[in-house]
Length: 275
Ligand code: NDP
Image (tube, rainbow, N blue to C red; front, side, top):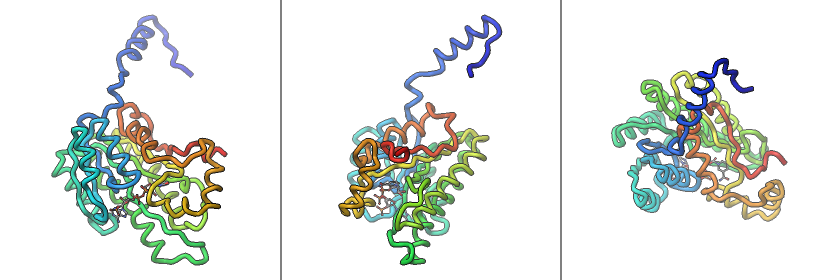
């Protein structure tokens, strides 16, 4: 229901506010610094390039398996600064070090994207404890530690954005991936818990829940003809997404245009969940 304006003066003031308080600049990330875990590959690289194109400088904690050159070249070619730090986010103390190092090298931080993650597939009766521990450590515990370290900084500066990366498995049980499902439900829970407390500090905490995206992570299921067809038949848009299809939502959530979105888990899934 729209607000009731009792006097003509109030109506005029309201019209002025609508006219003046919004511009396309609200979507810009100019002057911001984004820390993007796993920002060197797959979806993370897409978020990093998109945010750089929107004007942000980028700090990428990476696990060190891949070349940095490609990401570095692309980001520098759009005129933004990018720095990398080789680390293992599952090691105690490393997430806090990443945040410290990001501030030391970039001057400040404004956005955290908790993207790094992994998946281990096995029928539940053949689950391995070590897989459970590894998946929970990077997909959930690292998200908690990174978010907490960043939140301490964001609370002091009274601004910040945290974007977590969930999954369709933040909503569903899935098949053969109990540790992944548990971790991504956990990410949805952490998103809500942090949003609930950090809103008071002008910090928003949201999650993107990507559908089925073409990355290294999903190559094994795309290679299984039957499973691939089963998934495709459930996607109203009729195709697996490319990482670039996630770029817009990430920039939007990081921007001032999304300042009042807090605690949302936003599916970017071509409609998979509604079918
Ligand atoms: P990738 O395997 O391409 O990327 C995962 C990233 O996480 C890599 O950059 C990897 O670094 C990093 N990483 C893994 N372990 C660690 C660690 N211990 N410390 C630091 N970094 C680490 O996968 P995607 O791009 O597909 O996935 C990115 C995110 O999106 C994940 O959270 C995933 O669950 C989620 N997602 C993906 C979907 C898809 O369809 N692809 C669907 C839904 C969600 P390195 O390369 O150096 O090892």
